[in-house]
Structure formats: structure tokens, C-alpha cells
Amino acid sequence: MGNQISLVGAGRIFIGLRSGGILRYVGQVKEFKLNVSEEVKELKDFVNGSGLADSISFISKVEASLTFASLSPENLAIALQGSEEALASSVKTDEAYTAFPGGLIVLDGVSPKSVTLKKASDDSVIPAAANYELTPAGIFILDNSSAISASGTAVKVSYTTTAASVIETLIKAGEEYRIVFSGKNLARSGKGLKVDLFRAKFSPPKDLSFIGDDFANMAMTASVLADDSKSGTGISTFAKIEMEE
Image 1 (cartoon, one colour):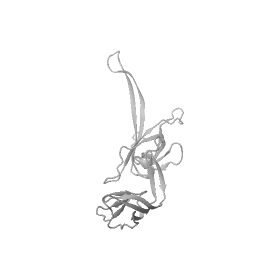
Image 2: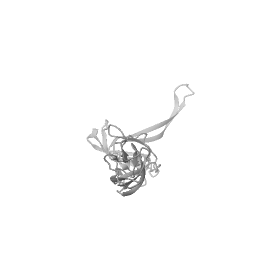
Image 3: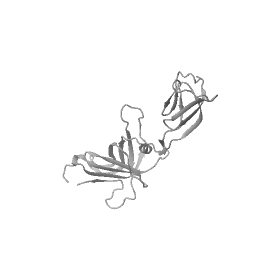
Image 4: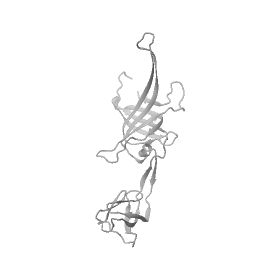
């Protein structure tokens, strides 16, 4: 290997629970880097009055920074310390709500289909065109609806939910993960590059944009912790980097 080793990396990130199971490809990641913080203890030279007589340094923190361009349900579950579940479509019949002009009736699930809206007083069907619009979150009652009173009208809704992924947030704080980068160094003709972080704990993202005029990204940090299962002289308990000759 020569003296000058340039690095332009590209490749896949795989993440899985440290306890075992699948190491899952997480999709496009725009940035992956390690940040190492150092704590330095210094002893001034009190004999000569200037400079240092001694110093010692410790690694105080190791963090991994990742910017996800894929906001899959699984990635969102990791980021928001939650769980992800796939739900099948289901039929809902005559659910009771109170409707208001200009207001939203929030239905179960997302993107309801086959919706029937009725007045609770006489079960008469309220036509959609002049009274409401369907949205992914439910039914939006139009401001000028003639069927819905300004003081509120009791209604019944029958509909079918769409199959969806559901992320329940902030219920799994403290999960530990393994992160593996399987990539290549484009500055060295695509030679193989591997980074293995044995034990990582993610912090929730500081911001997560759901409205914007560009592709959303999700910037996350993970504390890289010591893995006590790694032992031996010259063996790191934090991470291993391997570069193809």
C-alpha cells in the first residue's frame, strides 16, 4: 500500500439489533462518519515556569453520524425509538363522529377507501361532491356544506382502511444496534472498505421534516459504546476498519 491513500467512499449501510437477528440494508445514506472526542490532562512545568511537564489524553466519546435519505418505516422506527408493524386493510362500520364545516374527521388508518358518510339522525347518506373530500387522514368537511350544521352534526362513517405500516414512537428507548458499512473507495479504483461498529445507541433526530420542497433527509447520531465481548491484546472494543490492499 502506497504512502498516499485518498478516500472517497460509497456503499451500503446495514443496521441490526446488537442482540442478534437480521442486519438490514437501510437504503440510501448520504453521509456516514465517525466523530472522536478527546479529553486531555496537562501538567504545567512548575520547575521552569513555562510549557508542560507532562500530558495524557483519553478518548472521552465516540459518535457515529449518519444522514438517511431513505425514510422507510424501519428507519423511522430506529430514529424515533419506536416499533414498526404492517397492518392489513380492515372494514369499519357506522363509526360515530361529530362533523363541522371546515373541519376534519380523523379516521383510523391512512387513505380510507369506500367511504359512506351518513347523518346519525336518520341514516341518510351525505353526498361527497358538495359536502366533503377524502384525505389520507380522514374526511375534510367543506366550508360550504349544506348537510353539516355550523354547530356540529352527528354522523356515522363506514369505510375500509388501506394496508399500511404503523410506527409507534418513543416506546423503545435504549435499544442497542450494530452498524456495518460495506463499501468501496472510489479514489482507489473501488477497492473494498468495511467499517464495523459493534455497539451503537441512537439518539432521536433533532428535526424531521414532513413538509418541504426537496427530498427529506434524517440526520442522526449514535453513541459508539465499548463492546465487552471483544477482548485481547490490540483488539478494539469499539470498531474495526478494514481496507482492501
